[in-house]
Image 1 (cartoon, protein in one colour):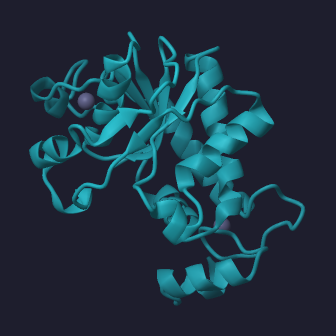
Image 2 (spheres, rainbow, N blue to C red):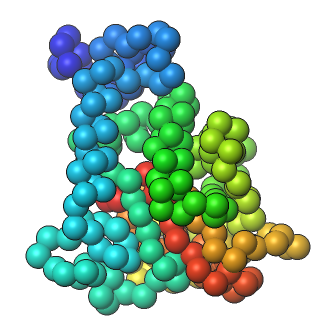
Length: 240
Ligand SMILES: [Zn+2]
Ligand SMILES: [Zn+2]
């Protein structure tokens, strides 16, 4: 961390956006030849967390680590989702949380790092299956100019040879953040649909950034199943 310790997260983001060879997590200098802006210490810590997540006892539905439960977490016991299973790569916390926030704030070079991890997981867990990215809110591309899920999807196609089908669209709903799980699910119903005329893979893999309540993934999976998919699994960067 060094001299950036005393600087607030926001200030650090501004600095790292302006200075390309600063680690996206701690702000220390990085190797300019590296494929993404992470120092050795932060990369190691993040990869270690990914391993810990992969080895943890996890809920067979949402993929979140289990505490004392067996097989299925408390939430998934009382909720039914349209997706069959989800596989978050990391827990949303620590360095990983800083990394996701930095990425969403505009450090687009981090898409390479995330797509590498997603590609590895897809090859291991879901070989040969087609990726369907969770679509951005309407108008987001126009307002922000880019979408964090789409950037990763593009890299999966371009650098990892995975097939991506952009077949979901969504209409504007209320801000999801302010709502509880039930309200979120209701809010999402009918808000996602398959693009007219699109052909739906039989067992697509949804791709999203952070799994929170699962309502968005569930709405996407429901839309895909309505149009013929028989099994829908999901992969996300993290689970909150
Ligand atoms: Zn670092
Ligand atoms: Zn669960």
